[in-house]
Length: 323
Image (cartoon, rainbow, N blue to C red):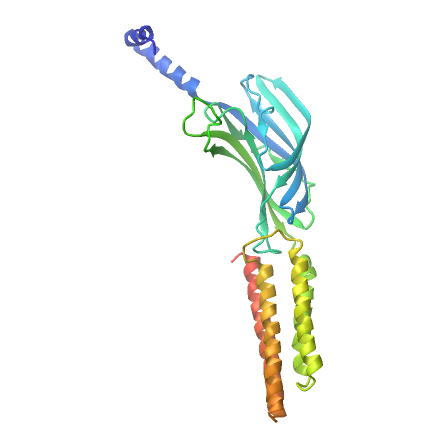
């Protein structure tokens, strides 16, 4: 501060000093921009491509006419975005600007509970020019909505919310004034959706369950009929593997252990158990004790069926309840 200014402040009366401090504080406050979103449509929910598409309106209300938040708006999680019908006008001293956007948005789907999954779909907005010391977003919660006629195939829309905050970067982007990174205001519209489950579940896993029950039927075939008894089990194993490849083709690659993996591995184990039981029963028969072999088969099919049903029920209930 120049010496003359310092000297004036020392001699200034108390009311003037208070006014000066308040003015300096007000000048340091960032401009406030209210942001709102109206979602017209959400479509092309694509798990394998890790994306979904949306069409929406975004608008801003602010008082400082020097701001251009519509021009400096970014959608960081968009793969592709197109804008149309842009407008900007002043009403009762408030700047009102907005536009319609159609975007393909990135989404890292959580498939651990698929097809009992609940997902959060986010549309992110970020200021690209002024940092948080110059401008901040506040949400227009009253007017942020989703079209009441909007429906997503195979999903229920549970709720939505808009929130604002800031995103920090470990770079100054070359700004000579900054020394420890930078931060920009952002907003996120989050839509919570839940899958319509049971129809999809049975269409995906019917082949797996049929393969198990075919293998389970071998206990009603005499052990000496080696070809049908072992042929059914081996054929069922290949059918179950094929079903796993079909289900995996509609899901993104994941390193997590999903419900799909658990159910198929469980079925592999019980198919193997059927084969081992068949070998054991055949061995008893070959040792000259057909009645004992028959008793073994009778106990084996009951035990295997009960354990398989209980294990499936536990895994499915855990996934559906989110345990």
